[in-house]
Structures are given as structure tokens and as C-alpha cells.
Amino acid sequence: MRLSASNLGCRRGGRDVFAGVSFAIGSGESMTIRGRNGAGKSSLLRLIVGLVRAAAGRLALEGGDPELTVGEQAHYLGHQDALKPSLSVGENLRFWSAFFGAASAEIGEPLAAVGLDTLIDLPAAYLSAGQRRRLSIARLLAVKRPIWLLDEPTSTLDAAAQARLGEIMRTHLATGGLILAATHGMPGLDGAQELQLDQASSPQAVGEEQP
Amino acid sequence: MTPLGAILVRDMRIAIRVGGGALMGVLFFLVVVTLVPFALGPDLALLKRIGPAILWLAALLASLLALDRLFAADHEDGSLDLILMGRTPLEIVVAVKGIAHWLTTGLPLIVAAPFIGLFLNLDAKAAAALMLTLLVGTPALTFIGLIGAAIAVTLRRGGLLLAVLVLPLTVPVLIFGVAAANAAVVGPVPFGTPFTILCALTLASLVVGPFAAAAALRQEME
Image 1 (cartoon, helix red, strand yellow):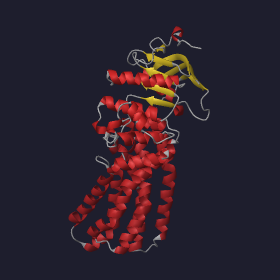
Image 2 (cartoon, helix red, strand yellow):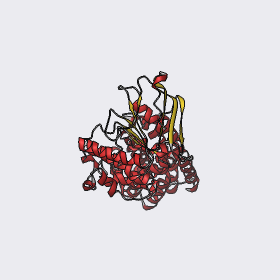
Image 3 (cartoon, chains in turn purple, brown):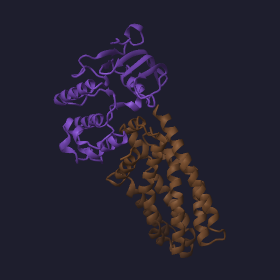
Image 4 (cartoon, one colour):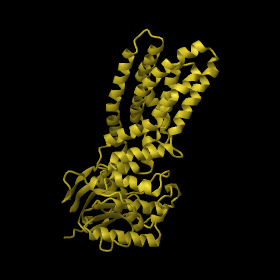
């Protein structure tokens, strides 16, 4: 599987957020997206998922399911955790796992992987910001999708949870997954390519291609 | 569980739990209808004559009450982004959310209507006719309301805009709903004539509502 973009451009609110972004990553590879605030890191991830339309350029996925869009084969971990406060931890995860058509209804294992298995019956309203983020990460484990798009995944996580996320990402890469993360450096993405969005409009900023 | 079953169960759970809108609609319905006899005075003949219209108006307002949170809540917490990334067409998801909303807010109104109708001197025959018209008509209110809820999804205080957008569109449903309920009680038109038109309005809104609402949501999410 190979996800490649050539000369992607994005316009929001009549302003060019970025232009001329190109990259290519394959199975088992990861890429971190860097740039100052407002450089378009989140917009790029949302564009790949299909939540924002590209103003220019094209995005191609080779080796995926041709019947599905990129967004339908990807997990998106955004700034918002998509949790309902009145539902319990288990109900929230069970819902997303059923909605995304998980192969099994088993949620114990993903919850254990993020260390929330003892809180399964607690309403999500009582979770801390870090716990909410960990519950969102459990969604990536409950439903298998090859492409992970992570927007500042570590922003609310403590050191132990960051290390655990690093482990989860290494496992995902080892099983042939792809990870694109907008982040300022994090464990688990050591061999990642880097895409610098600030200078992306100039040709030399094209992301390094790996074989 | 299938994706659509999951949405149905989730939305109904949220509606009946703390902060959900399920009970609010019935309580609002009860309060509005209870106020009418106080305002008009104990004229039983007058109450009987205008009873169906009052109940229909109250049901219309009550069914709009919780509608503005239908998509806005999902938009604010990021759920709508993920729903758009699902493999289920948005039109069907929207329709299922509409069904869940109707089951938790429309259906309780219909069950409560004959009891609340006692305040308005409604006899058994009129109550039965009213329940039948509400059963057929309230899904149309919900599904027309879906369009407004989708258009107002990104607005902070979308409830007012929703009412302004949706209420004019519900006028035909109101006219034929009340006409059918009145026809059963006082005539002279046979019950079937306005009732079939009400059925037609509901069927049309069941088709148009989800497509229009999904289109509006896609537009708003850009």
C-alpha cells in the first residue's frame, strides 16, 4: 500500500493555507508533519481524510481497496475526541467499533492496551483530558484500518501514556500500516520522514521519498 | 451490531439519559396545552372545537425543541467528522438519526396526547383521530426539521434559526393534520381526504429530508 500526494493545495476562507505539498509513504512507513501554528498541519490531515476538499493537486492510494475512498480506509484522531459524556467508556468505544464495522465486538483488549479497562462502566463525562484521548486511541485498535492520521496525538498524554502510544504505533507500522502525524517529535516515529509545511510552497520542500 | 443499529441505539440512549431531549419535549407539550384552558377560560364547547389545533401546534413546537442539537452536538465533539469517514452513506445515517429522534421525542407525544387532551375536553373518538394524525404527521415534522438542523449545524445558537427556517415548511403538515383531526370530530369533509394528503406529505418528507439534510451537512463541513 502506498499513499502519495503531488502538489496538494488547500484554500480555506479565501486564503491559501498551503500549496505544492508532495509526499509519498508506503506500508510500514511513517511521516511527521511539522510547521508553525496555522501552517496547515490539521488542514492537510483533514484534506487526506476527505473532510476538506483539495484546491489543487491529487492524492492517490495504491494497493488499497479501489471501492473505498482514502478516508474510508483511514483512522483520524483529531483535536476532538468524539465521545459522548452521557455514555460510558465501553458504550462509546462499542459504538464507534460497530459504526466502523469492526470484525469483532470485543473491546476489552483495546481498552487494556490504553489502560482504561478498569473504567469500562464509567460515564465518559468523568474522564480527564488524557483519559479521553486514550479512549480515542482505543478506537484505532478496535477497528483495523491501515492508514492512521494523527493530529497532535500526544498533546494531553503523560509520559507513560506517550510511551504506550509509541508502542502501539510501532506495532501498527510492523503490521504494514501507515502513519501520518502532525506532531513535534514523539517516541515511536524514530525513522519517520519529515514534511515541513512552512516552506512547502517551494519545490525543495518536497518530502523525501523512501523506496 | 450493524453501523445503523449502532447509531439508532446510541442516539436513543443519549436522548433518554441526563441532558437528553426525550422528556423535555413531552413536558413542554404538557405545559403548553395546560396553559390554554387557563387563557381561554372553562368554555367546554370552545375548547372541544379548537382542541385538535392546539394539540397539533403544541406537538409541532415540542418536536422542534430538541432538534437543534441533533447534528450540532455531533459536530461540536468531532463525531460528525468520523461519521463522514464511515462506509455508510450519510443520507442513510441522517435518516436513522431522524428515526431515533422521532422514537424518543415524537412517539412520547402521541402516547401523551389523549391524556393531555382531557384538558381540552377531547372525547374518545376525537382523541383516537388525533393520535392517528399525529402518528402519521410527526415523522414529517422531524424529517423536515432535519434539513433545518443540518443547515444550522455550525451555528452556536442555531435553535432560533432552525425554528425560523423549519416552521414555514411545516405549514402544509399542520393544515392537513388539523383538518383530518377536525374532520373526524365535526365533519363535514370525510376523514380520509385530508388524511391521505397528510400521508403523502409524510412520505415525501421521508424521502426529501435525509437527502437535503445530508447535502447541507456536506456543504457545512467544508
